[in-house]
Image 1 (tube, rainbow, N blue to C red):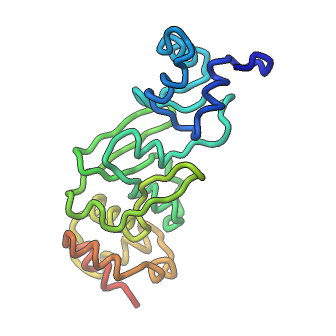
Image 2: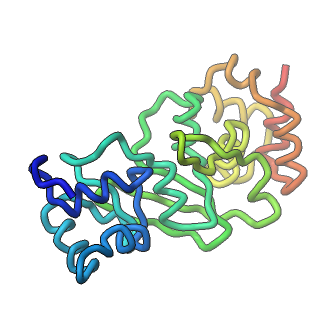
Length: 216
């Protein structure tokens, strides 16, 4: 442990051992086992801002001690699961929609929940098990970490099904896509319609039925 850096030695030890910015309670306590009471040391690091509690048992390094930016997608997976990042946040991630999204939105097989944290709001909308895994991919956010995120096709499908509900015509779906969501026509045409069909067949919905008809 290095005192010459001006950093609390326990925090310095954590920074050396942690492979990622997002930390779980078990890892932190194990890394601090050189101390007589690791939980007391953890409380001290929280008090001085060396660590920030995102949710009980989940932490990141404080603003002045972070080695690199944390991943909202990884944190979303950690906070509540099983879940994957989707809806508005994923559509923004793929630049399908122009609006800036501040809430990290996810889908879960569990009941819908939301978590207000010091980093912002994390929300989770329920989808049935049979459609949950179709169109979900593992995205590498660093050399040592990955997050479950919807493909752009699944993110859009989730957004239409969960936010817009029943659609009654091809005209209506186009109005939602081009005027409300402001998705560009070239981005719509670039979607994998075979994957969209697979998502639709897993759980047929009017929004996806009419979306499939939009292919040129």
